[in-house]
Length: 368
Ligand code: DP6
Image 1 (cartoon, helix red, strand yellow):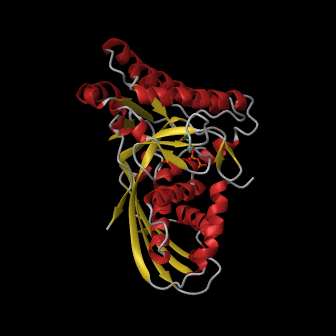
Image 2 (image 1 turned 180 degrees about the vertical axis):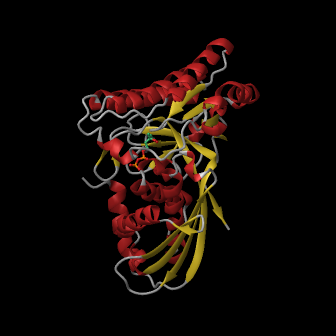
Image 3 (image 1 turned 90 degrees about the vertical axis):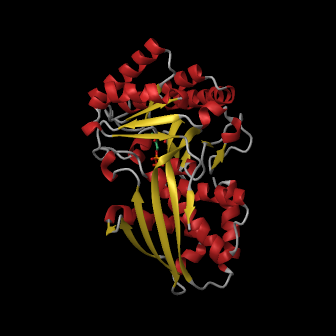
């Protein structure tokens, strides 16, 4: 089944090719990563999610991407050169090449372009902090700026970011939630008008001020590359015995989380965030083959966070991605006490004490 946005963008693509193309230039964006509270885990064809997800966009964990372009010929596909922090890097270069072919039906002018892509991350490359969301977010934003520059389209900011989210999703599902700041909802839910499986919608205006600058300290327990890619993990949901109840649970969590975010209810927020994180790993543990991505240090950190919350009443909680690293979420008002607790009691479980103190951010920035 083709989606509504997909049809619209394909139709508009016909008009884009009709324009005269000339010129060369450079476009650069800095795009943050995001942390999901309701997890996207499992997809349908077309990189569409089996359940809606909700995330906070981060501030400091970012990817900077520059896109040099030059119109060279009437071609059949873009000519792509890729550098990671100034050096050629084949695996990611191949990913971008494949990605650019996938999005060419929506951006047909790419066929006659020579593109040089350069990316770099604000966080150490090997820190095990997912970078596909920020990388594909930055790439999609740069492509929308390119369309704007050479075709004069996407002048309206809602149109611009909707298409950026749609294009980012094609690269990596979670990237659809990184092209704007605050809180993002990706996936259709009847409880939020305008929500869609094809692109994320911003819900920051809906959320209570306490959540708008929530803190996220990312504790790096293990910086090694993931033993299983998230794409392989998503695939394990296809014939997972718990897939149906999981989708049901995620939908219910989403409805509850939306009202919790509006009300500023941190206690309920904590309960949902932790249940989502533990469910994600329970699904991985119970898939075939079962994936064990948690480390002993991860479990110790989770226990200590719960213990600290019980003793102090501070509403700190944890969430996890598909890996061993822990995101500690807490209100900005408790920052000093939390940092003391993290340094004093949790840092020892991190690899070389590695951590990144981040927070909900305002979203990507175009670099002049
Ligand atoms: C556990 O977006 O990395 O972080 O679409 O295959 O690129 P692909 O997967 P990806 O999956 C993210 C999974 C998650 C949960 C989430 O961010 O919602």
